[in-house]
Image (cartoon, rainbow, N blue to C red):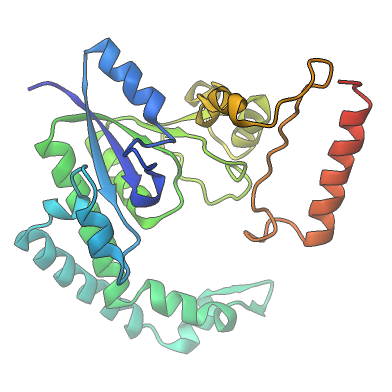
Length: 273
């Protein structure tokens, strides 16, 4: 069977033409190379709008690989693990979850009760077992992700580790390596915007050979939109300044964010572009 590269993507990553704007250029290169086939699987943050959204898409869905065996295994293991968590008394949990004699459990209790609930554990195991099945059934030899933020991506990374196949994480925003919650087992490789993010990943313990500075490939093709911008005189070039939702994602307070933007603009003026 022809080896396949699995791309996990989401409904909000598709443009009006059905192309996946984050990875479309990579897909084009794989087709040119011809050594592997791409398998694009679609997922959606489930809501009451999901059914119509998913039915309208042309790619196969992650959910199509569920089966009765997976549901039964996940349900049984979830009940077992959640029961074990509930069997630990609050007194024991407080004793276990403290730092320098400060009680951490009281602040974490409700988050932990959710994470160790039967429902959440069952969902996690269901996705993990489903991805293990996909990797084996579809002859997957590599996986491409555009982040590691959600339950789908984390479960897929864990399944790939069990099958000992590489996972390539293509940086899509400025949040990479800003938090220490990164998943970096040996088989995970990172393609990053530049040396700054390479340095940040190295500080988090990622091996240098597992990081490549490729430039921001998410901007491939953006030059095609220049013709849509307002015509400028040749002596007055246009500079595109792009930021991220750092305030909304609670990485920076509002005042700090705008002060940094003002500093960037002041420094740009000194370049006499």
